[in-house]
Amino acid sequence: MNQKHKNHPDRAPNFAASLKAAEALTGLPRNRLKLAKEQGCSAFRTNGKIHLPELLAFVATDEFEAAALAAEREARAAAEWDIRLAKARALTAESQLARARAKTWDAELAKTLFNAGDEAMLEVLKTALLEELPALIAGKAAGEILRINRDFHYKLVGDLRAARVAAMEQAAEAFAAEHPEDD
Image (tube, rainbow, N blue to C red):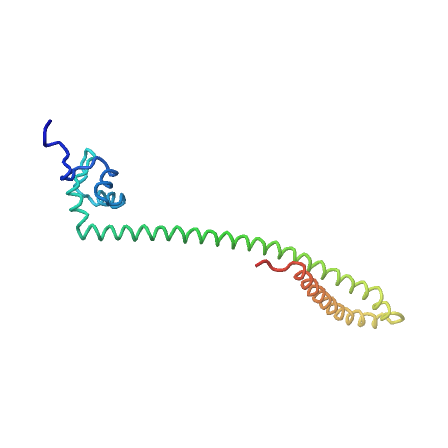
């Protein structure tokens, strides 16, 4: 047996057969080994073996250490970015859900308010046209009826607006009491 190829306990091996073997023999993490290969370290042979003394000399240089630190910072930044992106997506989804709830609530509120306002206006019209106006024009001459009708029209428009606003305010308060805001 040739003594040259025999492993001696006192002598460290010069070559590693793979990244995994180089990691075990040198104690360097796999990401540092890959970075050395990316940086063009000549310890990596075309047959897949890694010349360990050359690798250790390469990773001991200041340039490699600076590149390794930059790569680690970049990896941390990418991880932080992933976390920020996930948070942004969650906040966006929450915002969209809140807007959808608000649109539903707004549509329901608008319907309630307009219905209340319409009902109040109909009540004012019914009272005005069936009770107040006939009493005002009873026994009056045509010219006098035209003047009363014109004045009555302005009063009626004001009464309709006031009734609608009051009814809508009441409906809004009732709606808010029935639908407390979700926090």
